[in-house]
Image 1 (cartoon, each protein chain N blue to C red):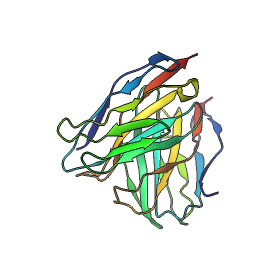
Image 2: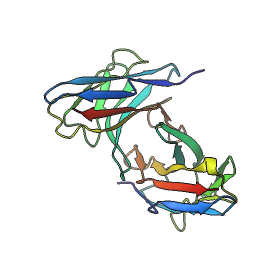
Image 3: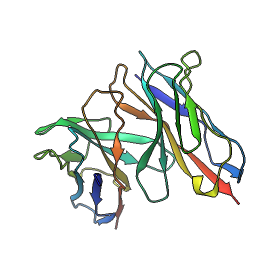
Length: 112
Length: 115
């Protein structure tokens, strides 16, 4: 079945630093890939998505590119802000299971 | 604005008691889902429903029950058989089941604790 592995946190950065959160997946077929963000005490919000190889999803300065050759979907942002502090989840949907499979989440803490 | 409403935000349960978590959506979505979130873990699927009057067990259905009598509502009951119910519960919905291009939309969650 599908599985998603993302880097463990917490990730602590200073404001305006460059962010990378790694995400890799295993799947039969070609799943759609998503990044969700969870702010404290809230549900998950879709941040960005990519549905086929080489697609780049982008939103609010965040980007991730669907890399079939490395089965990766790393999340990047050039300059983080304190307001970006949250938990970020990578997820894969489709393939054999037809379910949305989540990584364990990565806590990002941005300090002023 | 359309969205998913979960209530209550916080819920306390006594040992041996059943409790029901509410989830309502006005997005006109066919599919609805319940997830459980524990610290340091990803979301795990409890139950899902593709259409009214139909639902399927997810990966951790034991100790839980659901109903789907209306398109907009998908309540989750945590029964006394669930031995470790303390967690954050998230409800989600999506337009059709099986469309990998359609992301799931989430409510703000219910935090359940045992007294």
